[in-house]
Length: 240
Image (cartoon, rainbow, N blue to C red):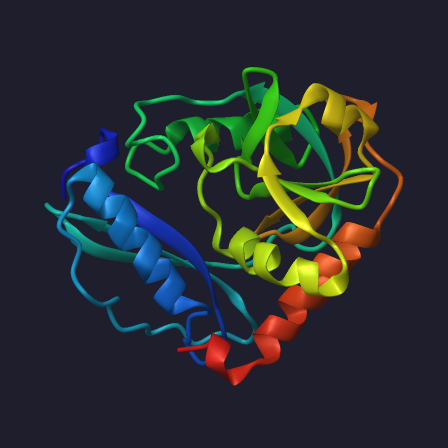
């Protein structure tokens, strides 16, 4: 098999898989993969390959597709999930408007950012572009403002459109927490009540600090996000 070298060599997604080999939100993951593949000029098959995972507990499956190598399936266990994290900030990787925000073959900057965070004794790297948080190495930042509003990075900031973030964007308003997409700039972060990173692997993790500076004091957003995600996983319709 050839080595993945550039963005248009591969498209992928990472999803939660249960003990029966069923994938959570498979239709949403496939829909996003198709949209990203189209932007990357990759002809993606209409369906996911069959899962053969049989584990003692839930974990993660990375489903990737390249025109040359076809489907590749990789399983791994959860590491950090629904915990409090320390973060570092790093410059956001940039490609071109069609490639930014895709889960593509040139994923090294994300992997490198995670390694940088671990080397600094932290858990996650947050990407900054033009003085605003736009993404994370493994999830999407959500911010609880002092007025009770939850902020998500804007669609055109270049972050990945997270499946977990979309679920929470739809359901948080039902719990009295309206969601706005916009710029998570330095001023907003400095005054926020809580900063959370959400994703298939992370669940909903509270960020205690960024670059050694404390962030917020509340746990309201992370606790609410965890309850929504946990409830989502108890629904039969979530799995297929």
